[in-house]
Image (tube, rainbow, N blue to C red; front, side):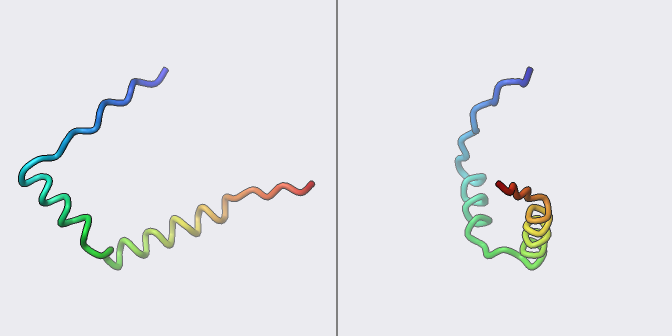
Length: 51
C-alpha cells in the first residue's frame, strides 16, 4: 500500500524569491534537448489499436 502524499510546503522569504526567479528563466539548451529525448521516447511507446 502506498504512503499518503504529504502537503506541499509553502515557500516564503528568500526561498520563494529564488524559486520565482528560476521559474521565470528561459529553458537552457540542456533542458530543451532533454525534453526532445523524452518526447521521442514517449512517441515510440504509444500503442495504436486497430478495430
